[in-house]
Amino acid sequence: EAGVVQSPRYKIIEKKQPVAFWCNPISGHNTLYWYLQNLGQGPELLIRYENEEAVDDSQLPKDRFSAERLKGVDSTLKIQPAELGDSAVYLCASSLGNAGITDTQYFGPGTRLTVL
Amino acid sequence: AQKITQTQPGMFVQEKEAVTLDCTYDTSDPSYGLFWYKQPSSGEMIFLIYQGSYDQQNATEGRYSLNFQKARKSANLVISASQLGDSAMYFCAMREGNTGNQFYFGTGTSLTVIP
Image (cartoon, rainbow over all chains, first blue to last red; front, side, top):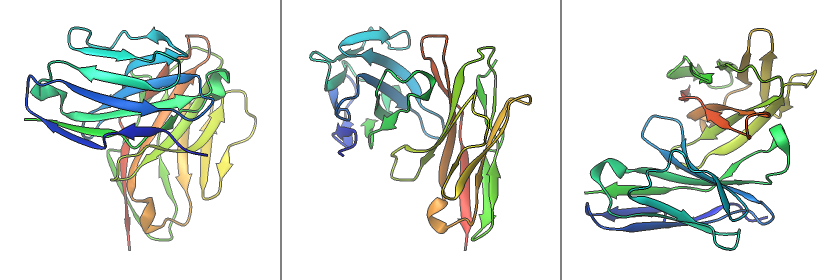
């Protein structure tokens, strides 16, 4: 069974440029998560999707960040324009979504973003 | 208050020895799940083990076991017979059942296995 796929693995851009990250969850997983992880810290949730609906985007900086999951499968996270402080690892995770407290998240390899 | 607390920023263990990584949690929800993840330097978060709040027995998965003390709200990860490949960051996490499946991570513990 294929795991969560993310691309690109690494991205270097200059500030004020746009950037996009792509995630394909595990087949059959209804819930998709985007996290931001700064060096030496735990992941912080940016947005959670149940199928194509964003059910928790309270931590997403909506002035520059946007996300979509149009068909309830793969998802794209965009930053426009990027700032120096956006340098971090962006993790995507997925879970079945109907398993209650046992609903385990499985993570992709992450995208390491460097903003110069 | 922090939902998940990991008080050990860094730990060292001799190869082949056992090590315990601490995790305490804070919730008033009677229904919750506790998870441990491993994050090697490559960056991917790897799911290790799960413990449910209603589980009567401590969870075990190979060399990993979870020392679940519900009254103390602790869920410590025990790694037996440490291997060099166990060197990584370890994160404790919790999902609350009655708050819209909110998921919380701790700040992590860096484990180094010494040959």
